[in-house]
Length: 223
Image 1 (spheres, helix red, strand yellow):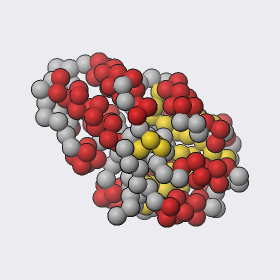
Image 2 (cartoon, helix red, strand yellow):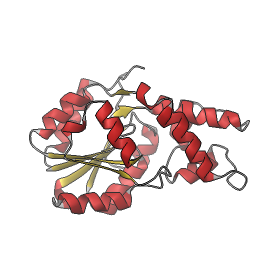
Image 3 (cartoon, one colour):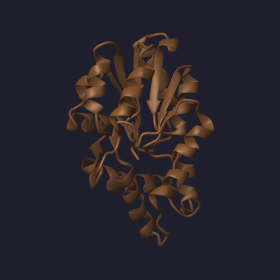
Image 4 (tube, helix red, strand yellow):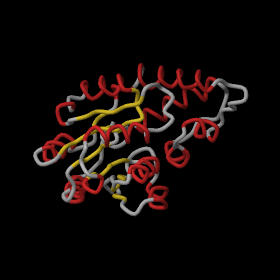
């Protein structure tokens, strides 16, 4: 799997976060390049129910939070299928079968190391808490972070409430805090928390979608 985030993009990130004291990172699609395996996992589920598979382009147009709405958009009938069982199946396909086949985006270690020299860094993820710990340990980046906040279960309802917990725990002023993510939900979280947001368009949603909702979007892929 080829990670194409360029040196120039990482430099833009470093420049953008310079005024802030606390940098909050999303995990999936922001630090780890896992869009392709997420598509593979959901297509395995769609095939089981004789529903047409989706392309990565289509996935980036439809993926979002809450996950229940996203599942409906890609063809699952939640009046007939259990949402909880679908979530369990995704965990099996993504977490257990594929998650460790993804790669970190290019330059992540260097970018995190540079930021940590001057600032507090955290992860705020819609991944389940224990899985987040396991994955960041597996990829060898845990030491870059002062705090790692995931959610309590695998239902991926969103992470606004965990964001409030993180902000209170860190106790750095909101105007000195920035969230870096790859989806419109990250922008929603930042707005709900009263903090700045930077979106990188090489994750789970298209650049076109992100630019419709957020003022600060970096195109994350090289040409």
